[in-house]
Structures are given as structure tokens and as C-alpha cells.
Image 1 (cartoon, rainbow over the protein chains, first blue to last red):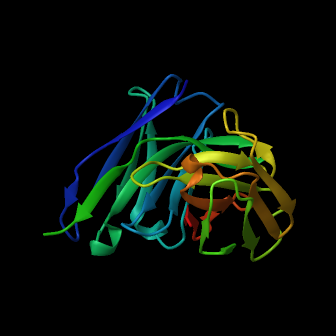
Image 2 (image 1 turned 120 degrees about the horizontal axis):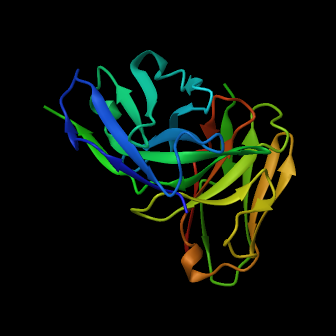
Length: 121
Length: 107
């Protein structure tokens, strides 16, 4: 059974780059059966899709974040990562990684437990 | 981008009640609509995918319906563990969007 776990700094300074890693277990990240995504949730607010990466290597990003986001895969470590540059306090959120399933559309399942990232000096 | 709205934003209900939550897309999304449940401090959990397909392990009291722009999540008989926030998400576009959520709490 696929399991995902986020890791990375819990505190990032304004203007710096937020970097998170999602470690996948129970399956190969390079399998054509899986795609991957990042979603975030500011404290007390709703879910915001950040971006997705597909087996082909294609990436899709939220237009509101596109200029600052990079999602990539490291097959040697069975991980995928998120980089968000030039962060501000508005980027403070719980960040989730998730497997993106493909069928009649796409859906996120399962999700990692989430990691809180606070942007503050 | 495709905008998603949900109604109501919150509701109060009692155990045993039938609960209906509506999700509307700003354009037709066929049946590319998913529903998630989120409890405080926890990651969202997939309930329904492709508008009406029940995810494995999810109780049958949850059901989804709709196509085009209007969708519904129904809980046939609300249980104590169902008090949570529910989100819809469209995947018609490769630019995914979530609805703002509907919080279901105890009356």
C-alpha cells in the first residue's frame, strides 16, 4: 500500500526558498501507474493545489504560483520534491504531498500527513 | 481557470440526519469531480471520485451524483465520525481547483 511522508524545514525566512521532500514507500515513484502532487492549506483556510508532475515528466502548476514553483522527481531516492521561491508570510501553510491517481479524471489518494511550514524572520 | 463553489459553507446537523452538500463548477467539467473529507489536524481523505464512484473502504452512506456543472455529496444517515469539512475538486482541467469547503458540525 502506497504511503507518503513529507519532510523539510518547519521555518523559512521571508524571501528565501521553501524546499520540501515527499518520500514514497510501498511503490516505485518511477512507475507509470503513479503521478504526484502538492497541495497546501493556510491555517484555518481551505485547500490550494500547488502543482502536479506526471510519469512523462510533464508538470502543471497553479497559475498563481507558477513563477515561483518547481516540482521534480528523484527516482534514485523514491522521492519527489517541491521548491517555492521568494516566500512571504502568505506562504505559511500545512503542505501535503499526495499520489495523483488516473482514471475517469484524476484524484489525490493517498495523502501524506502534512507538514507545517511557517514563513517568519 | 475553473472556479468551484460549494453550498452551504457550513451546516449543523444531528446524528441520523440526511445531509446534502452541493458543488458547482464555473463551466462544464463532465464527471471529473472528486469529494474529500477532512477532520481537524488530519490530511484530507478521498471519499468519492469521478462524481459518483465510492472509494474503497468508504461507508456506503456516502454517495455522489451530478455531471456538467452541478454535483452533490449526500450522507444518508449522519454518524458521529462524519462531522468534518468536505471539499470538492475538479480534474477536468490539468489546472486543478478545490471548492472552498463545507463544514458539518453537530446541532
